Amino acid sequence: MDTLQFTTESMTGCVLVSVSGELDIATKPEFLCYLNPILSTRVDMVVLDLSGITFIDAQGLSALIMIKRQAQLSGAELLLAAAPPVVLSLLRITRLDGHFRTFPQIEPADCLRLVDRLTERSTPEQNRNRYMAGQGGK
Image (cartoon, rainbow, N blue to C red; front, side, top):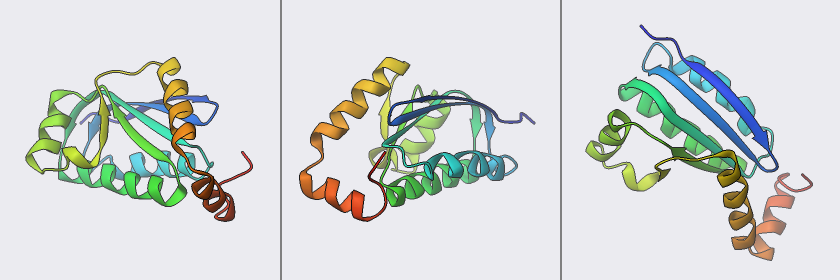
């Protein structure tokens, strides 16, 4: 059994988390425990670099769904980057591929550009709602 390994790079408004190993029933708690605190830091975007994932099962997919919901509740955008065929195949088979934004690869500079685009798309009403919900004042 592979254990999960994480590396994290924080930038203005974005956190890039590289995950490697097996994302399954045994590692789901570790995955959630690692990512939940990141989502509570009021970031605009969390990018999961999944290029190092060697295996994913239904519980691993469940963990991705849970993290996506947590991101939505905290007002953050969740992106999946460099997902290997094993992850993309599972998303496609379960018809969840349309529910996740995916990118073939991502570099730290790409994160900053995506955050800028996300900020540009936000309307004054969305910004006010985020501020009222405790998401402003970064």
